[in-house]
Image 1: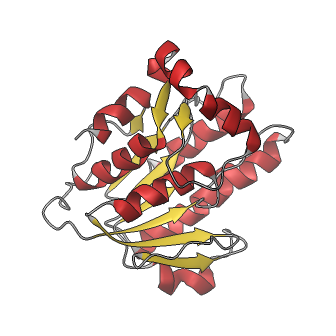
Image 2: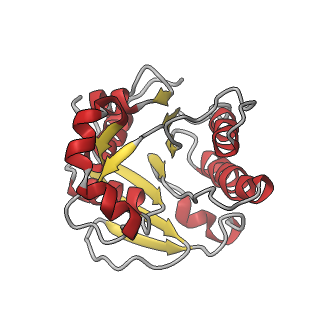
Image 3: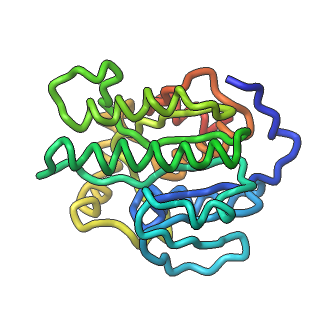
Length: 229
């Protein structure tokens, strides 16, 4: 892992994917509010309705076709890759194409354009680093994590959040998650090692870029520690 040097510069330019989803939106709001973030580019398949002086949007319908957009992806310090899809009802090859192929293609394009970048991938609690377990989504995400860590970024961090509470102002929350969020105070007390807020996730990502972290696999307990750095 290359030495992290952004702590003194404090003018970080970030790419965020998945801003139209709950995790990406929460991370985006935290970045827009943070003093160290100078510019945010959200890369999405569909528009996100928000105006902010730090914010720029790039619409790319297919993340496997980035060639025409490469010039707009250069000049950034970090990528917070929050895009993803549920594995429910999906075959492994289809889930792998979206989760593995798309993520790796995006990451390989960025490392070519921004070799000094920190790349953060939102994986999930229970991800299988061995790639050989019985749970399909965990195997595919483990394969994705392992491949990302082989790329020559300045640093790669694989975030494995569990239960997450939303941040004020979020709009992109599916009905099923609203039920979980309503129960979050109780669930967080029962399962403190499996729960965090999206504010903590966003702060942890920002601090991992500014100050670094000693582990490339960032579990819930690490997220909470990083958020307080």
